[in-house]
Image (tube, rainbow, N blue to C red; front, side, top):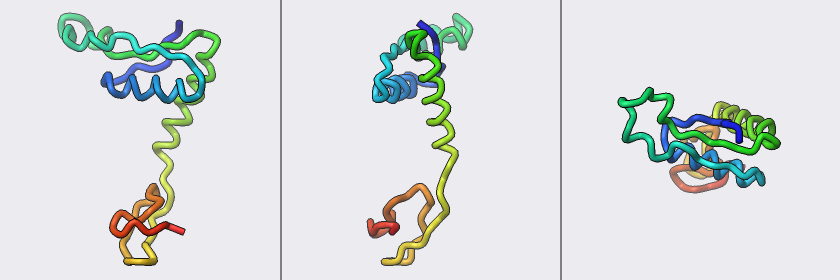
Length: 102
């Protein structure tokens, strides 16, 4: 097994595991119960990690890189045609009236 991700929280580790499994990559979360010993051991030793089989490591790292880039890319802000409210580019529908961006 090869570590492909170290998370700040157990929830994030499980999210990454689920994303990889949606791409048919079996993944395991390790160290998910070690937060209670943080301080007695180095913090980096007790952080949750996501591991995959070496055969899938390169593809998993590529998926994680795309996921990180997708979080950074946000479309242009837009104004709702129905109510005139300003919306973030990441919204497909108006947060105020739920009208479509198109």
